[in-house]
Length: 325
Image 1 (cartoon, rainbow, N blue to C red):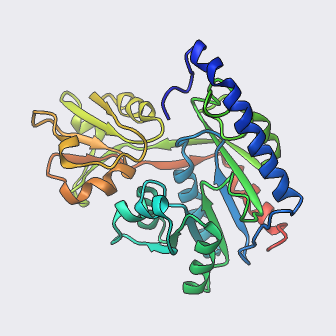
Image 2 (image 1 turned 90 degrees about the horizontal axis):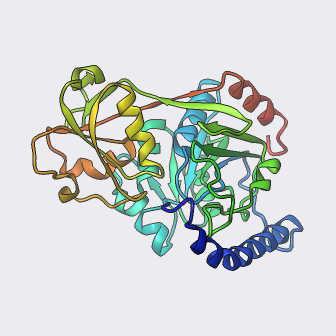
């Protein structure tokens, strides 16, 4: 999402449109809250991981952490996503399972990453309740669903709402299109938990950590980041906040040439050609789209999510008291 802080004149020109956007969003939420619009239950507890801003903030790494944590605690989670960036999200269509063999151009980049990393069934569809039903029909042992990016998808009832706020905070505090917000900042008061991904907000802390690079064409070839010191690398990122990725690499002492792309960018081989033989390093989310045309000089920087130690026990306690559970 570009222009988190709109130039002053443009911001105020767009302010009336933001008021209209906010009014529509408020009415819509009220209609669901008053049950004038139907809210559908998935039949198992639903954990929604979302954010208030348009663009990425670290939701997918948190979904992966939650899935792994719950599996270790005896649960059998499934994951549902809209599949943003894929053809299904743009055109609609029947629910589809995202697997490691799926085409990211069809199901989206994040569902591909979720399927590869989580080991959980991952289903995508614009209508999230349809994806939930399809997932449970194919995987009847699933006893919980994690919804990746569904805070504003009120048609699906949820048991737990978790909102991620990253280091960019809430921008200028205005709603779209004058600012980055999908809902007003006051919405944070109604969610069950706020996760701070480098933000100056009260909530559970979250960090992404990594220390090695993996060759995209050979996952067994892993190198410590320190092995790349002293040479120039091209750093590619098509995520919500590319600068976060670049700063991580620089913090490891790497000399990089940053190449930011829009979130969910549909990469082609030409996007990764920079006129030299220097290594090219990218995020895991981008790697799932680049693997089909990757070469020996292409590397991925995998990260692991480190959560506030209090978050896991809080989540188990909250699930124990959920109505669906």
